[in-house]
Image (cartoon, rainbow, N blue to C red; front, side, top):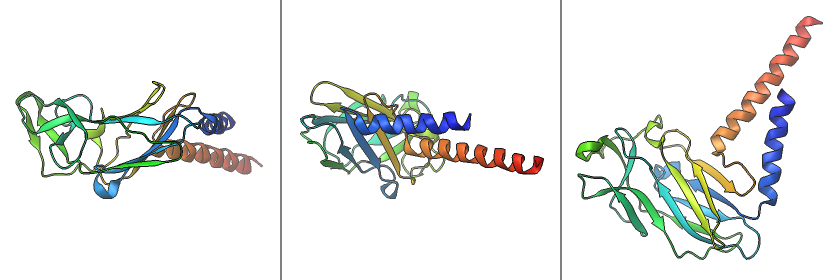
Length: 197
């Protein structure tokens, strides 16, 4: 079982290394996930042409963006609020292979009551429940789209997300947890073997 977990991890890693479309998205916890970067790791000639950073479905407790300094297009306005929306969309990008595109100027809040458009703009989320619908989508020049969900972690935790064709899009913290679980199982099985001797 442990060998299967480790082999699955290696397989996903190997696929990501040879993927035609690949990108790494870093969301900066020092800026409460309101700034970050996208690195295009695709084959030569494949550009990153667009990025969507969305809080997803609008329900009580979910994250939501507030109008602030970020460029790009604001989509999915919160009904009942003139200043809040769920998706920030950047189009017309020309990010070549191995190049980095950076963004910032976002303002993340939390929906208190979606039906009334009531928002909490004073308190941070340190358990990550507000990110339960959040995702990033990266669009490539040949029409391919990569999509990855954020992990439900506090806003002060940096998230490194990988996506591409042929590889499972997994938030980095989840990969680390899977590896730690696998190593824990390995240690436990060796300890049992030692006790039996």
